[in-house]
Length: 282
Image (cartoon, rainbow, N blue to C red):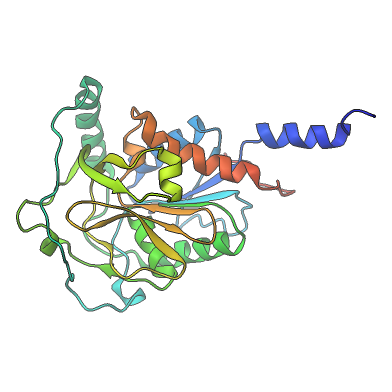
């Protein structure tokens, strides 16, 4: 018998070492901290980050994976839902007060950076909505891995025909809603979900910065995680590698378990065949 085909062996080696190009969306104004920490997570996972914004849409970029970042509320006209949430099974949100010293040193600095650079004040960003809708459809049609973070998760659900709760006030009656960069909220990960496979756990502590959440699920979308108050904290596609999370894993760089999400995205992109003429990230 002869040895392995040299061409096949080279392709396998190239596939294992390839650094996939990951498109990361964000607003034109503000959003610098989110871009920096998301890009850092992608680089640590072995990918190459590419920033995409309404002023630099880069529609022709041959990216290997897509991350739709957080920011302004999704335009309600896109899902045509009446205002006000329909909450059920209202429970108090759980909290944890013990955090590592590194967390207490890191989060005040990050909070200050977000306050300095963020432009989100509850308004809408229709140009960003249009850009990200096009990119989400392109990625899903091309069977590329997609990760939605906060607003990104919500927009993925809307693109697939779902709707959102514009306000979460009715979910938090007994206990005020948590809003923190710290991982102060405990969520339950659905058994048998792709998310459980990624994190290898059924429970997770996450941060909370969102004002809206998924209401009616979109096509081929299932719940991947919930919090005790009933708010959906993660969704995933039943037809490919597409995950949305309501929290911000990019703001938890010191939490190894949160970085698994970016590693899983990059690995899913790496396993796909490389396409010629891919654009190198600057």
